[in-house]
Image 1 (cartoon, protein in one colour):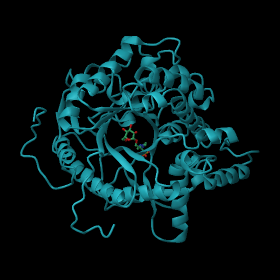
Image 2 (image 1 turned 90 degrees about the horizontal axis):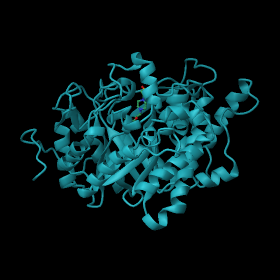
Image 3 (image 1 turned 180 degrees about the vertical axis):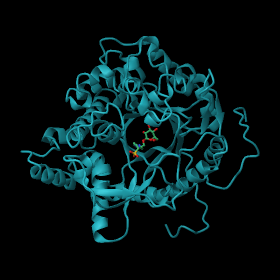
Length: 487
Ligand code: GBH
C-alpha cells in the first residue's frame, strides 16, 4: 500500500465472508448426555479440578447443546455470513469408532445445521477441536500412528452425513496446541508432557490425519459436492526484539518451529518439515545421545500425500511475540530447548485479559506477508481472531482491537493476500480451557450462573454487525445496546 495514513476508504468485497467461531467442548456442555462418552478434556478437568482457573469446566459450559435456536438467533442478530463450530467426536462416536453411531447426538448437529441453512448462514465445520474420545487416548491418542485411520473413519461418517449441506470443512484446529501444549506440556489435555519426544510424534500423526481426511474428501465427495477442506493453524507473528542479527535469526527459527512446521509440509513445493527445524532437532538429538533425530521423518509417499492437501489455509491469529536467543536453560530434551529462544511482548501494547494476549495489529500484516512470500499466495480464511476481557457488556477495547486488526486486514488484501473471510473468536463466552470462564472472548456475554445460560449482546456484537452491514471500518457508536433481529 502507498501508506498507512492515507485517506482512501477501503471496503470489504460483497463476497468477503464474515463469521464467528466456537468449539464443541467450550460451548456445548451436556458432557454425558444422550450417550456421549468422555473426551480427553472431560477426563483431564474431572481428574484435575484444580488446574481450572475458576473451577468451571465444560460439563455444562454455555449449554449450547440445549440452546441451538438461541445461538442461531444471535448469529442472525449479528448478520454473519458463516458460523464456524466443531463436532464432538465422542458425542457422535461414543466408542471412538464408527461401529456405533450416536443418532441422538447427530440430531443436535442436524438441528443446528438445518437452522443455519434456513437463515442462509454458511456452516463451517471443524472436525477436531481438541476433544479426542478418551477411549482413543487410552490407546495412545495422537501418539499412535493408527490415529490417522481413526480420524479418517470418523471424518467419513461426518462427510457422509453432511457433505450435501456443509461446503466449508476444517479437519483439525491448531496442531501446535494439540501437540506442543498437550504432548510436550500440561497446558492442554491430554497433558502427556513427554517433552522433546511427544510433540513431534503427535505433529507427524496429526498432519497425516489431516492429509488422509483431505484425500478422502477429494476422492469420494469433491466432485459431487464441491466443498472446500482446509486446516486451521495458529499463525501468531514473531518479530526480533530488535534488529540485531542474532535476534533476527532467533525470530526466524521460532517462526519455523511455530508456523512453518505445519504450513510447509502442505503448501511448500516439496512438502516435508522445514529444513531449519529438521537441522535443529537432528543436531540437538545427536548431542543429547539419541541415535536418530527426535523429529520423525516423512516417507516419500507421506510427503506426496501431504503436499497440496488443502483447499485453503485457516489462519488463527491473535497476537505477536518478540524473540531473542535464550540465556536460560530449558529441559533436555524439549521443544523449547530445540528452538532455544526467549519470547516476550511489548509493555506498550494493549493487554487482553489473557496473559499471552496483546494487541499489535501490524503483526497480522507481517504474518500474511510471510505466508505469501513462502507459499505463493494460498487462499486464506482467518478462522479465528479475538480478544479477552472481564465480564461486562461495554467492551470498547474489544471493539477497538477488532477494528484495528480489520483495517490491517484490508491493507493486507490490497497488497495481495488471498483472504476470503474473517471469523471472530468467539460468538459467546465459553470455557477457555484451563482458564475456565475467567477470560471472556464472547461478542455475547453468557451468564454462567443462570439456569438457561442467558446470552446478552455486548457493544462488540453491535459494532461487528455494523461492519458486516457496511463493509467498512469506521467509528460508529450504537445509540444503545439493544439489538433487534427484525430490522
Ligand atoms: C485458540 O487458541 C483456540 O483455538 C480456542 O479454542 C481458544 O479458545 C482461543 O484461541 C482463545 O485462547 O502458554 O501462555 O501461551 C489460541 C492459542 C494456545 C493461546 C495456548 C493460549 C496457552 C497459554 N492458545 N495458549 S500460553
